[in-house]
Image (cartoon, rainbow, N blue to C red; front, side):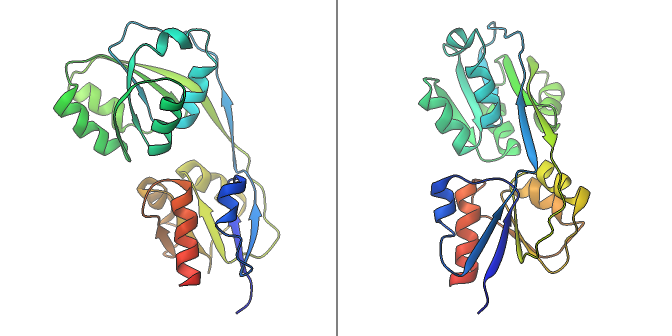
Length: 221
């Protein structure tokens, strides 16, 4: 069988790249999104901190009040977000893989709490709408910015890896999808892809390594 050319819309770590190290794969990596951390005036008068990405955590860690914020317990979206918080001394009470699932946890256990919601400029409306509809006190802090770094890929490729809806949007600014098989990290990324292609494979878990393992299973089984 000929070499399978895989395009990742995000540059991978060495350990992530190793998952596709089989000679059958040829890997192309480009960042279609640039993350810009934003300075912000952090408030500490909340019961809980809420994070939906590792980018928000990195921004908090660079804030001058991060030691005070570290004293406040957290809930978050994403297994890797939880790991990063705990690695840096934060106490995570609960996490879910998706924001929709986290709203159920909040409704059952934390509806009487106040929240500081740390997010990016392209955040979805799921959590803010939930807070408003249920009259739960929250303040939103935009702590990072997603910038599109779209580029035309001149090489032919068989597979595309997508890790966010914004990555899909950036890719499609200068590229199209035809025969390529798209592997994606979660349901919202899949939703962004489905108007453009039917060749979409959803990873078992919404983490990068799960996407890569899905590719390996698909072609090496």
